[in-house]
Image 1 (tube, rainbow, N blue to C red):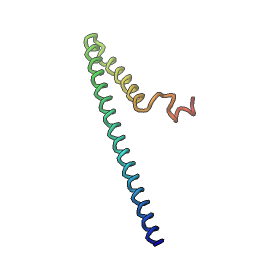
Image 2: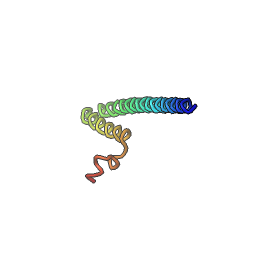
Image 3: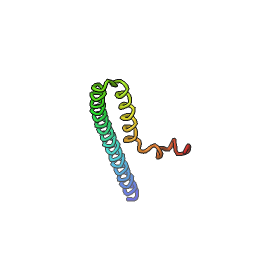
Image 4: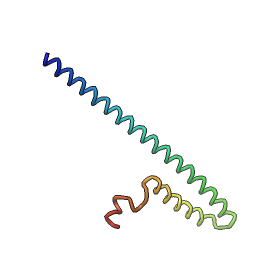
Length: 96
């Protein structure tokens, strides 16, 4: 009987570990899908903003400067959305 209990507890532990691994993999997949969706939404908003700024700049004759400036601002905003405020980045904490 003790061998049966040991085998049973080993089997239960194995099943529990497999279930935990499956839950972890599912959470990782869900997080990756959410990050991809956020990145797609940011890219769509950036394209929309860039198009608006480009059209405004075109009317004012400053197309390329405004377009590059808007891309810089949009890229900075996207990085901020993905990584959080600059002062919270671990790399920069040591420098500040």
